[in-house]
Image 1 (tube, rainbow, N blue to C red):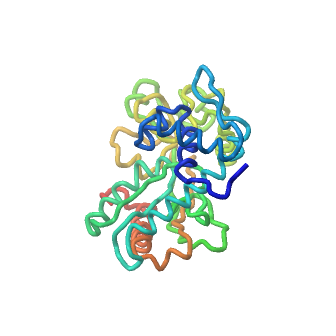
Image 2 (image 1 turned 90 degrees about the vertical axis):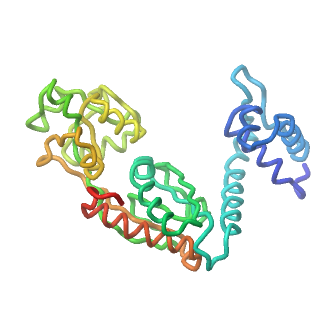
Image 3 (image 1 turned 120 degrees about the vertical axis):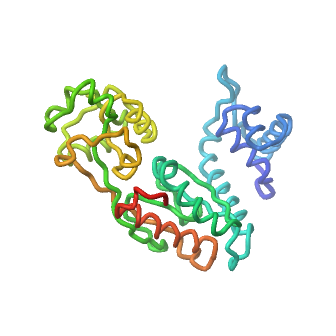
Length: 303
């Protein structure tokens, strides 16, 4: 095995195939032709002296070696992306790329308006949004800024608490007009409910807040919070929604607001080394200000 001169482009090809599952899909992701991906993958396998994929009816299946190497390739890709972002502008310039990670609902429903306001004032800024409920590692520069609903514990991370996002039970008015409205938490089981599928952690958290809910009670199940929000808006039943988002939609009606509410404490975080980078510092400050207003009830106005 010769690993002293491994080519990053070959490793990028490997990672693309690992992510996409086929040569053609990997080629599209890399914006190259399929033979190029095949050539780079072959070169990497020769350098390593191991097979990375085997053909299967569904495409290319990773070998055990590929699965072991995949995490390292992901780390290298994150570092390469961070390098590209760092090179996109001078540290004293308010332009260049800033990568932000947030939950799917926050990233899709709240942050776009916040970032549009900032980009109007700073048109040189470019934003990358990574929507995931997984806590991306700021220390490994997987993202420049993270909006998190858990208190950061890493020592090298700068974190500003912006308040609490309030959650409540909501349903479409048309659904309640047709099926009625529960008057007590114990009555929820008689209605169509929207909730998690396999995320038992969410269920435990809800039960701790007084909602005696079980997976079998949900007539629409999804672990993706955007899917749950879409189901509530479509009138599939009663589900949990951010109060600020619900107040933007006149078709959504609160259900048992005096009996159930839940707060998600929220932080805006970044690696302490990025405080000297103006584009990141500017974005961080804007997010803190805008999300503080959002958490304190400024949801009725465009952010």
